[in-house]
Length: 242
Image (cartoon, rainbow, N blue to C red; front, side, top):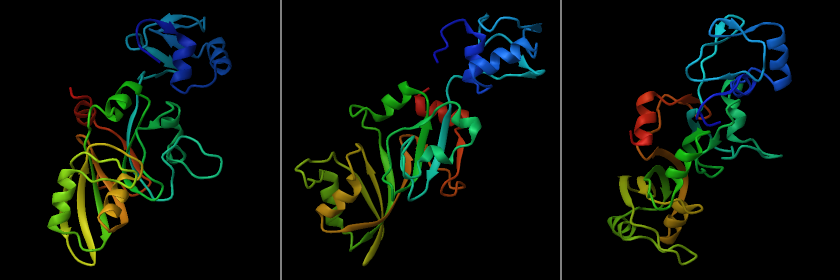
């Protein structure tokens, strides 16, 4: 809901999760809604959502248009807003956040954990997902097979995937090397199963994958899988490049 000027009172209250238009009409009829200290009598009253003081049952309603959530997505949950069979990330949200209808920005595979941004800010989502922007995404992974300096060089040049697509140069860092290696990888695009396919192209297999950063946003280590929180003001500004 764009905040470009005055809007209907009932529309604002519905956006803030105070009920359906019918329920809000009843609230107003019962004289439970005030605008700038005056009892509101008309659901269609035009108000400035960010300037006028709106109260319901004596409590001030804090208007906000957008919501920004950082989630540590657990394994087994789909990066989607609805699915008839499987659990989706929005199933993990509280009603106070669900009312804003946030959606995941991009996707993590069902069996991948880690940083997922949910928002209802379509413009920001478009900026972060635009192929032209090359927003970096960093992953921690465990790999079946010994990751070598040669792999680092190949990843730096770009890996040719199974469908012939050559990825953009990426930054591979070996944390531990052995039969089960640990790595950090930063990529600048988001092809389907990209990290897994990149390692398959060099004869290795990803056994665990977790996204730890997206652009300037770094996963909060205090968030357990399935937990989430709102972004801080500083994080929001970083994300928007302010």
